[in-house]
Image 1: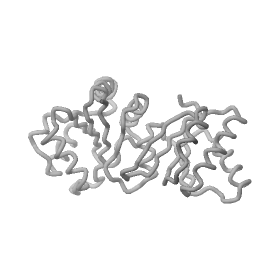
Image 2 (image 1 turned 60 degrees about the vertical axis):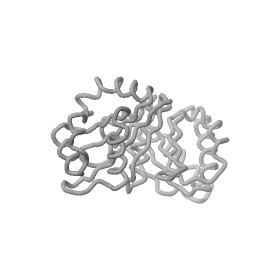
Image 3 (image 1 turned 30 degrees about the horizontal axis):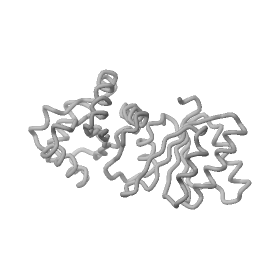
Image 4 (image 1 turned 90 degrees about the vertical axis):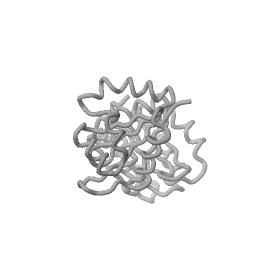
Length: 241
C-alpha cells in the first residue's frame, strides 16, 4: 500500500501557534508511527526552532530533514521511494503553505504521477491550496472567480482563458461543473490546444478528491462527475507536460 504526502501549513509570523489538527497529526505521527514517518522542514535552523516553538517533541528534531532548493534533487527520489513503500511524509515550510511557490510543488507533482495521495491540514484559502495540491507550475496564474452566466459570454471567456499561456484557476458553482467540462472538451478539440487540468473537489472535507489529467482525457473524466461538488479547476500552463 502506498503512503501519503501531507502538506502542513505553518504560521507566517513568528511566535504563532500551529493549527491544532496539524499539531495533533505531527504529534501522533512521531509518538505512534515514527518508523513509518518522514518529517520535512525547509531550512535546518528555522525549521528546528519552529518545531520546538510549536511544542512538538524535541527528541524528533535530529530526525527532521531539510527539503529545499539545494536538497530537492537528492531527496526527491528517496522520498518517492519511501512513499511507494508505504511511508508517510509531512512537508512544512519556514512559514506559509508548502508546495505553493516552493520546491514542494515538484514533490507533489511526482506523487500525482505515481498516484500517491496528497492531502493538507486546514488552510484558509482554497484557491492557493488547490494550486499547492495540483503540483502544476504556478509562477504566474490568472484567477477567474466566477464565469459569466450567459452561454455565449461563458464560451468566449473560456476560449480566452484556454489560450492564456499561464496557469488559470476557475472557481464556480457546483452545478456548473459538468457543463464547464463539456465546453472545455469542445474548446480543446476544436483548437488543437491540449492542457493539463487539476480538479480539487470538496476540499478539506471527508469526501475530498483530486483529479489530474490532460484535456485529451477529459471526456472520460466527465462520466465520474455526475454529482455536485464544490470545486476549483486549475488549468496548467501551455507547454506543461
